[in-house]
Length: 247
Ligand code: PEP
Image (tube, rainbow, N blue to C red; front, side, top):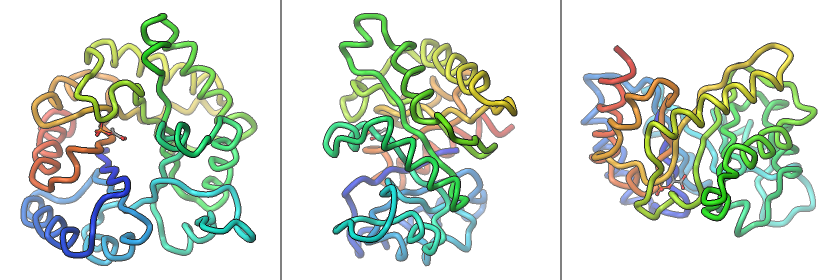
């Protein structure tokens, strides 16, 4: 799956142009395996323009509950909006909004309750990477975020090294492949029903490096920030993904 994370970008006019560009690029090839996470405010606009094509429209985050929580979007609101998937644990939420693994675990639980596909984001800092602590860090994040939760087949993990997000720096694709294999093993061992999740890579993916990632066996797709804001570039990446993964 290829998911666009628009973060706090977009407006009604430019979104319209973006959707029309995507439709004209993809209409003869189909819209399978594409997800878009626009802002909450633009969710319905994007859903109305693209949902009939089968594109999945999701949220970028969710609160742990509803009620007296000014400014929040509750899990039941997400379900009510027919949100197909929801990112949780993005490093920007961890850093700027202080989401810790315990909070992310509660979000996970609410998504499961409302049958919304969770896209759990994990990733190490540059310090952890340099110190050779990547796997340990990822294992802790996975175990603490899924603790006590029943995992479903539709779980997606997005491996996003914090130091690769929006920087133009990326790990070597073959190293990402090894890490994805590790992530699959950790999740499989943590679940009674042997779930092997799809694992997406995120962090400075663009149309020039996408093929290097998608040829790797354990890289099942990508979560894309900056490069998803341009519909043509995003479509180019989808084309590359399909050529290499959906044969
Ligand atoms: C992201 O923030 O999830 C992301 C992958 O961003 P970028 O593609 O811009 O590095």
